[in-house]
Length: 283
Image (cartoon, rainbow, N blue to C red):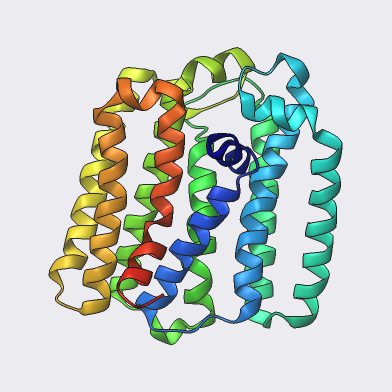
């Protein structure tokens, strides 16, 4: 029962939403700012809307020929999920238009336009692959901008060098997550005609790239730990833990692939900031 429930949570990208909120809390805490309620509504709404729209588009295109359970789920429940998506997005949008600060609305508009262009490019690419078309890069940028960019936009005076380093390290963790999933889903992506950078460069080059990203995020997060500033030390330690989980998944590829463990563990890693703040009494 628990496995069935968590699988549905994953299909609906609710675990991704929880990870975004936990990570968003970490970015706000690191800056020492208190984010408005409207941001806590806009962040999960935006993340869920983008991820769900992507799954619905793929489900509509592939129908019963999809090779992943996630897309088959969205195909079988296409009507209810689409109806819920419209109600939530329209209702949330109306609320935010009347309540959110102007800076947050502008950031949301920029994110919406960027997401729209991303979807357009991916759909135009179809099943083609190219080293110049990095689908994962667009998703990583949008996700990082929502989690780390909004606090910086609303409280620019709080932004420091540490913020830029932390945002960069977080971005590399996100990219590691996305490319790792693309690597493990290379076969199904090829069968379903999904474009991905891993398809363009091959599995061997993708593994080398992932280890390079691992080194990069370790160096950036390690720098934060060594600053001696409590907020950045704790943030860097958290990012090191998140990155370490992902590198562990790559190092134990055989185990990670079984029963799609990489998805359960990889997405859950983004919830670690929330647990750490709760345990430390900072939640």
